Image (cartoon, rainbow, N blue to C red; front, side, top):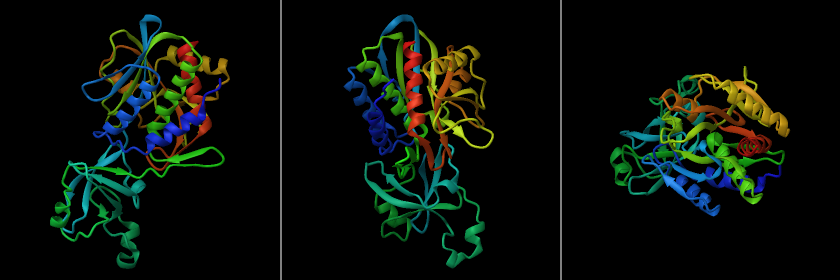
Length: 344
């Protein structure tokens, strides 16, 4: 199965560079709308701003849905402090130590953009000594130092920055010569790229899908909304999300993970078995894993009463919700399993 990994890599780098914190995913959504259009796929937009591209298959009565999410972690300006610096409220599950020292962009309601850096209030060890080392990192102790001449809250407000403005973190995407991919927000833009890589392979090889398939780009996964705008005939829901690599887990950066259970629910046995068998038959490197403190668009949707069968797969990712890392092989195996699921 010759997936065009140059296309997948280029698309991934492209969309990683587009800020899309939950609540402000418009630019990312529009970029992917154009990608659907390059394949001649009509796109529908949900009331919440997600998009669905549909491809007809042999069976139109038992349809399937594949979802990957474009929304990422991020923050919102919660307060302009008396010294002109910004106090943030997190979007999604951020560990504040993971963004210490990271550069950010603040987008005002008028579309102006300003840069800054996330720092602890007591950042300098020369000034604060051991307090810098021992200070707890949380929303109350972290702040954004703006790259502007501001000394007071009024100085910052004059720039047009206000409470409620979105803040995105620099992604620092790097692909090493050994094929490792380091970046923020591989969750879930690596899966988005894998999905389109599979779609490109299907289109270019004139493959017929077994079932009419809805390719869903969700935009509030990190907030736990799930996908509820599911077409009526959808019988199966395959979420594309990351496999968590670490102690007590089997996920591997070079493999696709088939999730057996997350913190919300076990996934369906028969659906999981079908994916495992497809991986074996197609020579796809895979792992089965149980995830802790984790939910996917599929499991979150089921918790809201959506009546479809459900499963979740994704490339193994190390240091999830931090400065993440995966391998191109893991993304490739993810794309291969998507193709196998849709065509075999």
